[in-house]
Length: 411
Image 1: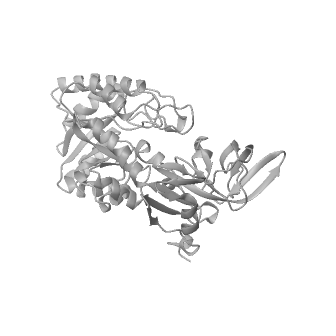
Image 2: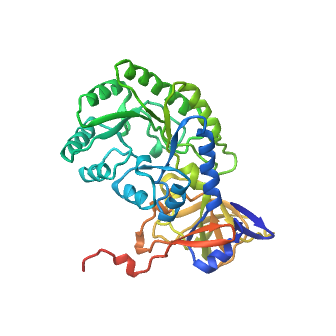
Image 3: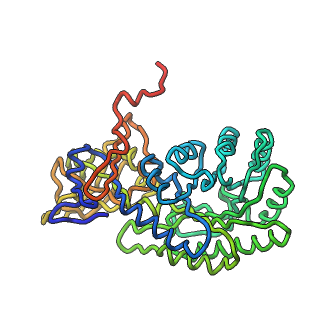
């Protein structure tokens, strides 16, 4: 949780400038209390119904973050064998792990089955055939839901829309019954539920409600054909307020509107990620140079697009705050990184006070898809991650060294 104390920006009770001095920059910094609060919002909203919350660990897969979330009673929404491994290592109950993704490999499917996860969210007929074949070979039964694409569009970036017609995700809506009747014939498959996920960073409840209404119709048709479904998986996708003027629905508002649609006695699964971790984590960076070029003012930071790719990839907005409050006049400024790309920026045309060379900036709401999407582009070592609890800090990922860049290379 961010707040200014006198002229110092703090996360929980710790000055961010002190974190920068202690751990260096750039560094991802997370608030434990904010993670707990965000998760509790989901837990309380779900409490009238039976089911559980699966954290979408693709948003942030740091082991310490996962361990803390698993201790809250969360399940896990995973999209790879590696994410299954991380979640089991972090203490998640395998019977609360659901496995999504359009491209599960044979090796990943076998690993998931042997790990005794709750179920697969199946996205194609051929995937079902492979799961059935592998389950038979290793003499196990595979619980499945089909991910049904309800053809619902939402107002978000094209790259993170997953519920409209023509995307790679899910079973086409018109093929839902066909898929379940096909699965019913497979002797190593146990049909457990139905799944839908329409995208990410969605700031209205209407698309979720429309998708739920379409899924309800599919459920009625499926159950009319003698297939009983235990779980309704509503996916994730609830957005957060990255900038002033945005307004996200509350978790309680979203769930209450969906529960009205699904009035039958089912177990519910939700798969939030961004709305739990995004505004609990931030990127702390240092100004290494200042310059004026072509009439434009630049702050060049030690954080680059390899550390936080969202502004470059999605044109995403993250508020940028100097960690020291000053009364200096604000000027229009481009905050850019050191990568050899014109697309390497954290924010353009931001009204910021004068920040001196060596001053620190906080790029806010970077906890989701920040560290998890970072890379070593330009041979830049991965940066540190720090978890803050009240007045204590804990290093949860060491800053990589140059030697680490060569890890697994064969010379």
